[in-house]
Length: 627
Image (spheres, rainbow, N blue to C red):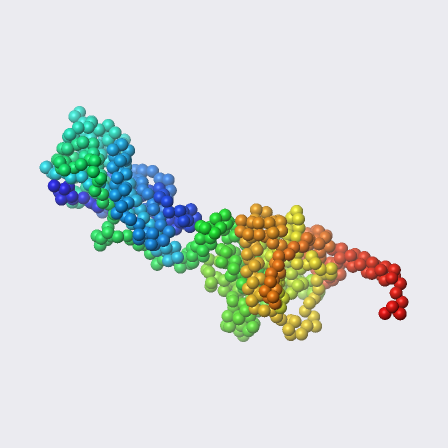
């Protein structure tokens, strides 16, 4: 007679907390990636003495700690297992579950024969991280042996002896020797018969022992026992005894019959599915989804990519127009969470079609005026992705060549101080303004404060993207103003309409914006950061100095120029004057670009050039007849 027809067993059940799947998703993204080899994990069951009538059946519990080192304690009993995590749902479905269960059974039998075995589970998983659905199936291999129940009765004969033994020992199967001594399997006295104790971890009201007893019965059959007295010990006083006789048909050399795949709630064989998408806060889902695409890069394409250094950057965008809109979106795509806008304009009717952070209502919804660009841009970013921390400051950057009147000095100074504070608070500065002179002061500040500065500028059918070098860079590269022989000045005066507006081919802004952000990523992936040499490879491509693109013939060039010793923005005399005098130096430069030329040395260069021209003309001694 088969034991399954006489002994009614309590099934082994599993329970998965949501924290297990959260930890699995993190492991999959950051550690497992495409590695589908078996991995060790663990689960835990509640210790028998802590079960009660409301919680009378031990459950195989899985949570975040299943991936951590853990040991058994007074309340929980650790159960070791193996995780098989698949990369596609097809691999999960097509996995040969029957053959693998048989192989696991053969392994278990081999371990039993060498007395080196313990209960173990297997867990199959597939994680759909886009939809946050997790497919899983637990197997607990059980080896079957045929025993005939010849006698069954309540039995508390060895209860006190067992209690004393378990106070200082852990064991599930014990043998009672002739002198009433209890021993674990390593010290069993082998023979044809014996008396054994199975420490049941189940308090089922129908007195059904836990299903894992089947493995212990098979172990005894392998050891040569034919007739046994078995006490199923329970600590609730309801221990039960059986006299069992092994069926003569049992063949210890034959492959064992193995079962063990867990059934669904409908008592059918099949996997289960946990849908965490409906349980997780949508904002948290968005946060995890944004990181998903980035972390997938590390699986095959860029395993050395450092995503954390990108995510940790605090980025200041000077300009919330076309460039600012596209740069901010690209930054969010790379996982940047701190983005601040500075702009002095309002949203106009021509903006929304070219600047994706604004819409038609923004052109008139602020007391029939356009919304403040910087503030609206930061709001729009948070509407796109609530996890971003964005602020907008309505602020006019003091511009060289635009004199500061006495009445406006206080407000201009406050703008300068606020801008200086923002530079201190941020790691990366993007210069995305639409005038040349507005870039001068941020260039000076960026060099002086050793910030990463990326400059993007547009022409009608061309664009320029370049990086500035900090003041302590060993081989300083030229800034936006290093090719100038005069200081920047007012470029707004006496202009026609087409000159006052930023007239450019629409696609140029997208290209310049994306290249600006990609250049920043390359800088961050280089061990020297902003001090990276020209075109030196980083973990994520080259780090050029400047990129010039031309839409007229669809060409692009990588160029470089050294820092100019007499540059009006990044030369040493200018930086030292800024650091020593601060606002007073800036105010003099705003009121008189000639003063800046004097400080930087450009005035002396100009004078020397004029003298050389006069000398050349006098040496030629040309008369009117020569023309």
